[in-house]
Image 1 (cartoon, rainbow, N blue to C red):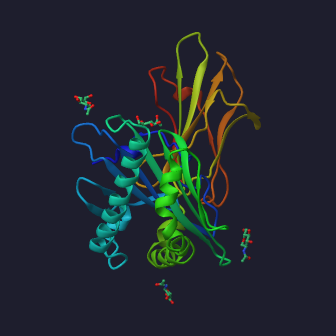
Image 2 (image 1 turned 45 degrees about the vertical axis):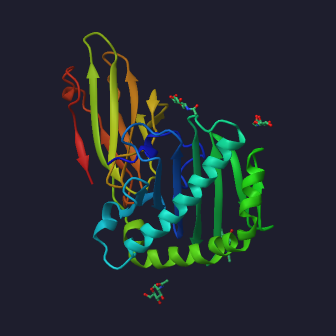
Image 3 (image 1 turned 180 degrees about the vertical axis):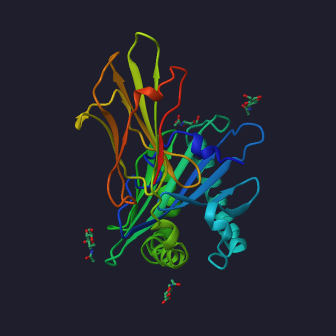
Length: 306
Ligand SMILES: *[C@@H]1O[C@H](CO)[C@@H](O)[C@H](O)[C@H]1NC(C)=O
Ligand SMILES: *[C@@H]1O[C@H](CO)[C@@H](O)[C@H](O)[C@H]1NC(C)=O
Ligand SMILES: *[C@@H]1O[C@H](CO)[C@@H](O)[C@H](O)[C@H]1NC(C)=O
Ligand SMILES: *[C@@H]1O[C@H](CO)[C@@H](O)[C@H](O)[C@H]1NC(C)=O
């Protein structure tokens, strides 16, 4: 089952740090609770990430924490029975919080959404950080401030939540500062090879021309990890401003894809190439566009795989 979480707008900003940095690792728990889920949907879903890679999933329907992707094959890394119990416990608190908020707003029958993002990060130099924030109906709700060890209400209804959670402030602080980095450290022993891997991009250059009209050149890169990539067209070695594209998107299997488009006037005789820079490439790739490969019918052209 595809977590609906991933199709909902991320009201708390990006789920995970956008650009992974070498020697920097994070463990992120991301939850979405819906007061009126659609038929057949669990009311609560959680996805847990190691850096930007989905590591396990939990939902209130199955009541089970289940590893995703390459983590399905790693033995001994986590006790999934125990993890399921922990997630179930979080689910009960989550439900209580959601109900409290709806009761505060006198709307116990409405359709509402509570999202929560918490976790921690570690750097190779021993430095660590943590975060815990939630949003109700797309607006900031409450946030844990570990410097002053307190819950900071960001919504009128959050004062009740703060009051309820205040006795557990030390637990929250200990969790964020000690327990979570410890768990992350243990996970890293089993996961560094996945998070530090370098998958080079494959490149496909294609074009589409209607007779007498300009050509649209398309350079698509896919299958790369990590996410950071440099991608542009050149005309006779001069960098061209792209017409569109450039967004880097997850392509499943933990890798990314991106593309850039360029418009070329009819009968243009300049040399066009797509340039690709990525940490997994020993040197930048340059894939030329060959106008003879343009069939006008759509996507054909050179493919270069590193
Ligand atoms: C909810 O209803 C109660 C009683 O009717 C009222 O006192 C309170 O102001 C209402 N709360 C909100 C947020 O409208
Ligand atoms: C809640 O909403 C449903 C459908 O919108 C309605 O059938 C039901 O009567 C409502 N219940 C209350 C207590 O308002
Ligand atoms: C670790 O490096 C980060 C920046 O990369 C820096 O902000 C932090 O202070 C460093 N921590 C220690 C303990 O050196
Ligand atoms: C991770 O592995 C190292 C050595 O392989 C070991 O010393 C350390 O205790 C492990 N850490 C955890 C948290 O399991």
